[in-house]
Structure formats: structure tokens, C-alpha cells
Length: 457
Image 1: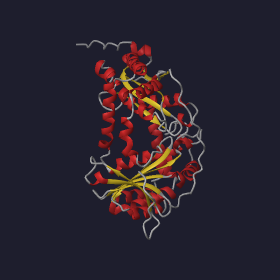
Image 2: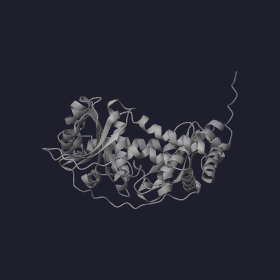
Image 3: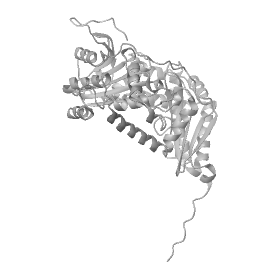
Image 4: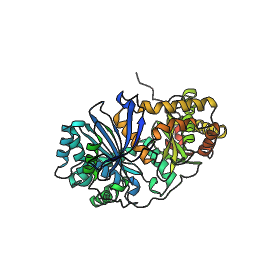
């Protein structure tokens, strides 16, 4: 719900929207919390929930761009920037910067997804001035000193080397490559063993200068701070960033059409299977129908069709899941399971059979009703901390949802009809699957293990 524009006397801070939020699962005081659309004196916007239950402040924020802004021949730049922003800035070297964080128990982190460069800040109320100031320094004057860069680079390379023997990592990387090819989404966010050694300080400084700007900034804050003070802190923290980002345009893209299958040979006891295909974007009018029916096929909990058929009935895998992923320029559904090498074919057949069945017939009424009930209740139960609520509010902003969406969500779920669910199932899974299998070669997997030599007396 939207209220008339309000201006507080004596200051230029505005609270333009306020939405009642029922959060009894978080705390008694947050049961009557209000999401405020706050505009600082300098024009920084934030979604804000003031809550004094505990003397804590949590902030989540993001900039558009993410790893899709990495140079084509240098994937991993955004990831390295995220690892290095808190490794010394302004007049503090890396050791001094982290000592200040540790001394006040301030939690500060950065990360890159394909579409966004985001960060998190969490601290006690009494340490808010120092926490926000350390964030300001990290964003506006990172050092990128050679010793720090090479230390972090070596850590990233070590992780990439480990991934070459990790079947789950290999399956995920290959799946994105098949789904998106030469599009920026097809490149690994963490980079490659070939690209990361060649990333320069100039590359990272260029990324910071182009991406970290006020026009794409989104902020969510939950905690024990008043609106006036928060507005001042936001201006001090983000006010000196460039006004506009200089982003390289990223085209919309649809994931590769199924069916396709790829095999990556790796001599490991357990075969990992990644599967998926084109999904439904968050802005699509049929998104919620897809979200509900996807929960029925492979969502959270022990009641999904894939869990019942693959694990409970056949004992083929310990876990199997499938979920929707949506980005700025595309969307996917993607799932994963692991099984014994000699049972990989049977496991793939079981997954494909369930996908075909729900695509052709849709869910039952009982499944639809139970999925709606679960999805309506689970979200509020998960928002059990200031940090989680801030993360959710930031996600809503990234998804371009209205500030009152959290109040309307259950009604939108309830409005999904059986026809909607059937159409969504056919749209998602009617073409089959993109499948990536990582493990022993099929011939080797089919062979029984060699018998142990007899022991001598």
C-alpha cells in the first residue's frame, strides 16, 4: 500500500512508503514492523525495517552488473574484487582493516553473482559508525596491494584446482556452459585456471569504477537504528560513489533447448547428475504457477515427486532436488543428484520419467493444495533473523517487486489454479532435459569391482 509523500520537519529525509509486516516468527516487536521506503538527504534509497528487539543492525546491498561485466577473456574479475575489497583501504592495510572489524565484531563481506555485485554488513548498534565507515573505505578506496592480490589470487586458484576433481562443481560448470554457450552467463563467476592468473589490478580497478555506482544501488536495512540516523549513515557510506555506472550491455538469452546430454569423465565412486532447462523469468505473469508446480516436482521437504521416486521408492540417491533460477536476462530450472556409478543410468531414467509424467498430466489437486500451504507458511518461518529479512527485502528489490509484495504473496499463491499449474508444468518440462553426467565412463561403471587377492596364511 502506498501513502502520500511525507517529509520530516527540519531534515531532507523522506519516508515515502510504509507497509505493515506481520513477522511473529521473528520477534514480538517485529510482528508489527513496518517496511519503510527511506530516501536519505543525499538521495540514497533503502527499504528499512526499524526493530529494537536486539541492539543489532543488518544491511544488505547490491549493484547491478555482477560477473556478467567481466571481460570475455577474463572471467573471475568480479569474484576477485569481492575477495579483495576488505583487504586494506584508505589508511589501513589488510591486517589493520581486519583488526578493526574483529575488535568490534563487525561482519563485512562481498560477493558476485552473474547479475549483481553485492555485500553484507552486520554489527551491534553501538558500533554502527565504525561499521559503516569501514564499508565506505572498502567501496571507495580499496588498496589492491600486490601482496594481498597475489595471496587472494593463490587462494582462488587453489579452489579452482580442487574443483577439477569435484564432480558437483564440474557438473554445475558444464551445465551453465551448455545452457548459455558464449553468453556471459555461460562463463564461470569464479573464473578459470587460465583466466585468473591473468587478471590485473587495472582490470579490478576498472571493474570498481564502472560497476560500483549509485544509480544501480539497492539497499535493505533491518535493525535498531532510527530513520534520521540511517539516512546520514547511508549518505556517508555511499554518497561519494559515482553517480552512474558504465555497464557493458548484456543481451537477453534463452537457455539451450532440451533434450541434450553431456558426459564428463572423472574416476570417482559416485556419479553426479545435473539436469535442467529453460525456466520462467521473475517478471513473467506465470511465474508463481511455475514456482508452485516446481515445488511439487523437486522442491524443499520430503514430499517432492523426485524425492519419493528417486530416493524413497528406489533408493538410488541420498538427495535429489530441482529449483527455479531467474536472472536479469534469462531463467533456468536446474536440479542435481548423486548416485553409485553403476546406477547412474537408472537414476537418470527415474528423473526423466517423473519430468515427463508431470509435464503431461500436471499435479494432482492434493499436491497443488499441499504445495500452496507449504509455500505460504515456510517463508515467514525462514525469516527468523534481521539478516535473513534484509536479504529477502533486497531480493524483492532486485526482482523489481513492489514494497508491499510481502503482504500480497500468499494471495498470489492462492490464485494459482490447476490449469495454471498444468500449463506451467508443460512449459517447463515438456521438452525434456539438459543433462550433465560426471563420473566414471559408462563401460567402466558397469564393471564389477575387482576381487581382492586371497590372503596368504
